[in-house]
Length: 132
Image 1 (cartoon, rainbow, N blue to C red):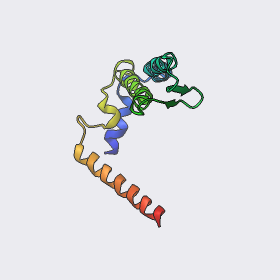
Image 2 (cartoon, rainbow, N blue to C red):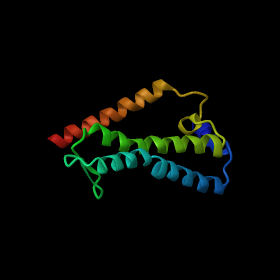
Image 3 (tube, rainbow, N blue to C red):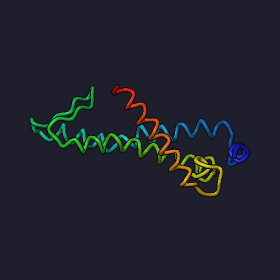
């Protein structure tokens, strides 16, 4: 398995400027494009002239609206960041996206499931020890 894993270093285009440009692309997707829906929502709430709705811009605390909308707006930035990672890996580094996860041709879902249950067991054990 280690031989396959180390062979990933030779895949794709790996010049230093690709990594630097990739960080810039991911940051733009995350902080600029991802914040557009949240910014639109904030402008809509501040401009609706309804005294029951408000946004504290220092803490991003929304008042007077369903908590689902701020949750979706804030988490959209994470989905945008993942899109930036995908585009960087696929087009800038010219690698298949699955090569970020595994050196094999396809994802071994049973191995992922085992890892999930090991992690779940460790988290459960830590939670149990914390409550005692």
